[in-house]
Length: 533
Image (cartoon, rainbow, N blue to C red):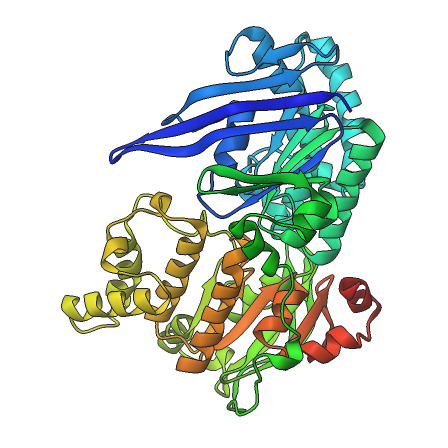
């Protein structure tokens, strides 16, 4: 195959208050037309900086120290992308497109999805007359409907706003929008993050189909070795700013040579759930009972006839595809939504019958860990401010000295050591995994009896996922905190509580409830069978 992109001894640095940081060190890489290249590595390994340099979207504090980025056009002529003349900008904007990881933040909430398609295409069109725009808009909308269907969405999504879509739906929309320009190179940052297993398969099939049909070159970043092994034809492994291995997928998976690659490969499989954590011996007192819960939003039925019991010290897993209602159900439990009908009992007290003071206490006792760690923390506040604001507001501790002691204690308990080093930092100075631990520490400071963890490992490195799951198990065992673990990943569900309860959600209904391991081994409902695959 002919080459389409070449990196030659590329080094990228960041200027910081503490000096220069080398993000990418002498990266050399040849990508051929039609390749599907997966780039994998830990947070801070330089992989995001690398693809940002290809897209011409590096941070203002970053600069290319040395090296070249060569793009081979349709005539096999070399275009040097680092020098930003008009020709290079044209190729970057039209032949190379990128899909960001955080789809939740990539869409303008004031525009419909159809307007996003149109604005994207129009921005890359040389014409601007009114008559041209009208004809162009019709053509774009026709193509957009096809693309939405190709990523598993209905054409009605064209008229929707981003806030009306689930995280997984937004991610698919972003992929569809990127295809409207018919790029030769498609770069995706964590394209399947936060998607359920079925939707992941759909996205992978879409990308494989595009690759086969149009010989489109795909470069994608991921934490998920399972995804990379299924989609990529070649794998690049990055570690501490260096590309430590680049080879065919088969060679990387079966014959890794670098120590870091071998560590990643060891995360590909998880021990048989039968040998893992048992729930025997847990308290069996009921903590929360949901009875016939229904929820309507804007006259649309979101949840139907939900019945669920969460026991003290229990880990309950909720699985389902994007838009199935699993996150909404979690928010109902913590008081984020008020059910249209039905009852919620907390320690045998009906929430409809308790005082405002008691309800406020209930909301403190039930904490929600949001999925998107990059938007869950206020970027303008230090970690100390973030953690102490709810403490002081609710007057949970006696003195500031007591508060400081608790901050250090819980930061240490969630694996942030030494804790003093984190208190004066801002979220932008932390990795995704560190931010996730901060969210758990904040929840623990509220002295909860229940924590709802919404996809807590979907946006962190695969090498760190087991650590985070073990942290949840630790909190459950050490403090007897009940957990509702929301996920699309049946492997992590098996790990965290193989003998615990699992609730399978589909189109706002619970279609199956049982023990995790038994349900995975012997699914009853057709959707569960499809999910297990």
